[in-house]
Amino acid sequence: MVPHLVTALTGPINELEQRILESMPAIERWFRLEWMEHTPPIYTSVDLRNAGFKLAPVDTNLYPGGWNNLTTEMLPLAVQAGMAAIEKICPEAKNLLLIPENHTRNTFYLSNVVQLQRIFGQAGLNVRLGTLNPEITEPTEVQLPNGESVLLEPLVRTKHRLGLKNFDPCTILVNNDLSAGTPEVLKNLNEQFLLPPLHAGWSIRRKSTHFEAYEEVAKRFAKMLGMDHWLINPMFERCGEVNFADGTGMDCLRTHTESLLNRIKRKYKDYGINEKPFVVVKADNGTYGMGIMTVRDVSDLDALNRKSRNKMNVIKDGQTVSDVIIQEGVLTHERINETVAEPVVYMLDRYVVGGFYRVHAERGVDENLNAPGASFVPLAFEQSAHLPEPGAKPGVSAPNRFYMYGVVARLAMLAASYEMEATDPNAEQYD
Image 1 (cartoon, rainbow, N blue to C red):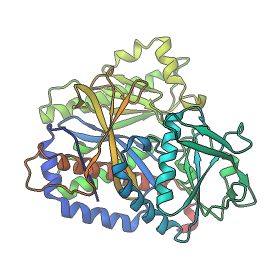
Image 2 (image 1 turned 135 degrees about the vertical axis):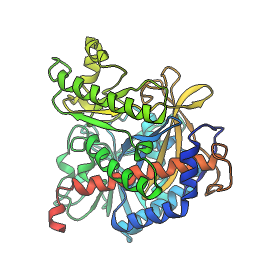
Image 3 (image 1 turned 45 degrees about the horizontal axis):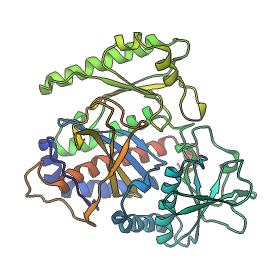
Image 4 (image 1 turned 90 degrees about the horizontal axis):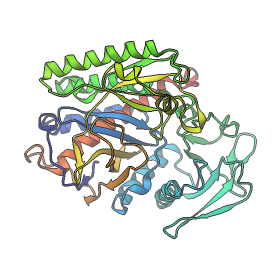
C-alpha cells in the first residue's frame, strides 16, 4: 500500500503518470506475483530524480539511515510492515539485535537508530544495540540533543551466535553498510537471521550489478505497460581500472563517458528534449554521497584538478576508488521553496512506508544533492493509506505523483532482490 504523501508539488511527467495510473491493477498484480518468487530486502531507500520527461532511480541503499527524517505519521505503516517482515523471517522472534554504524558522535545518525528501535519495538520485539566499535567495551549511553538517548553495548560472540550480555537474539538487523569490509564477528552465524545478508555490504556490492538487475526489471515492467523502458531507467557504463591519484585509466573513463553522452544525445533527439546531456561518475561501491562528480563534456575530465581527483579517489572508511560507474544524469525538476530537491522513498519489506525530499540550496539541477549542506523536508501523510485518485488530471493530484514514485522505488527494490539472489555466495546449495 502506498501512502498519500502531502506536498505542494505539481509538475510535468503527465504522460508517464497517466499510463501508470491507468495500469494500477495490472501493476499491483505484477508486483504481487514477483514477490511470490523473490524476497524483498528487509529495508530499502531509493533516491529518485524526476526530470519531467523521465523518472528514474539513481541510487538504492540496502542499509538506509535517515529514518529520523520520516514523520510520526508514517510510524503505523512502518510498524505494520516491520511486523510482516518479522513474521516471514522468524515468527517466534522475541529479541532483535540492531548493529549501527560506528560513528557515535553523529547524533543525527543516532536519531535514525532510535527511530528504527521504535519501529521494531512497536512491532513486538525487544530491540538492543550492539556496536562493532572496538572502543566501546562496556554499555555506553549517548545523549541526543532532543532529550532521547541510545545505549550502545559491546557484542558477545559464541560459536555460531551473536548477541549481547544476557541477550540472545533470533534476528540481527545491520544498519552499518560494511564499507570497510566484513567483520569476522558477523561471519558464519549459522543459527540466526542476519539482515541484510553480508553480500549486501559495500565492500562486496557494486552499483553496476544493481543497475544491470534494474535494467532487466525496467524492461519487463515497461513491456507490460507498452512503453520505452528508458523513461524509468538510467543508462550506464562501467570502468574498472581508474586511479584518480596518479591519473591512470583515465582513457577508459573518457571512452565510456563519451559513449554514454552520445547515447543520451540520441535519446534526447528522439524525444525532442532540448536539454544538455550529462553523466554522473561515481564509485561503483560506496555511499554517503562520496566519490561523485557531474561531467557535462569529456573535456571536463581533462580539467580535473588535484583537489577534485583526491575527492574522487577516496570514499568512506578510507577506501580507494578503482571501479566507477558512469551513469546517465537525470535532471531534477523538483523544487522546495525554489531550491532544487529530489524525493527519497523508504520501504520496509515490500511496502512503501514514507519518504522525504532531499534539498540543497547550493546545488544545481544536474548535481548530486547528497552532500554536506543538504536538508530534508518530510513527505508527511495526509491520510495513512490514501491511494491514488484515478480520475484526477495528471500532474495535479499529489497522491498520484507519489503513487508513481512508489512504483519506481519498488522496481528498484525488486532489482535489489534480483541482485542479492544473483550475488549470493551460498546460492549453489539451494539449486
